[in-house]
Image 1 (cartoon, rainbow, N blue to C red):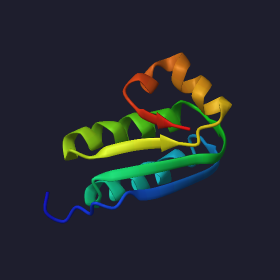
Image 2: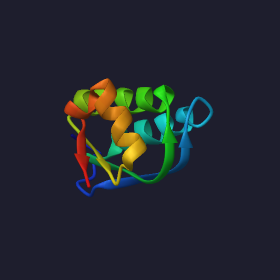
Image 3: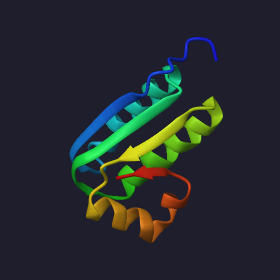
Length: 97
């Protein structure tokens, strides 16, 4: 794992994660996962997430698996947790309070 930092890297999302904003979140997570063993996605400021945001999370989780890294979701509010539970990815994602 040359070039991977052992310090968790925090990506902070805020506002709405939707078709317009999901691509930038996806890029931020991809970049972080390339150089860190653990990436924490802070969702505490997220007010809304749709299927585009969900897709960004699933894609990042798949990349983490390939890179032998860990993706952790932290601070997910009720709307995000509801979406995760309705669609199922919460079972494959590390979700912390």
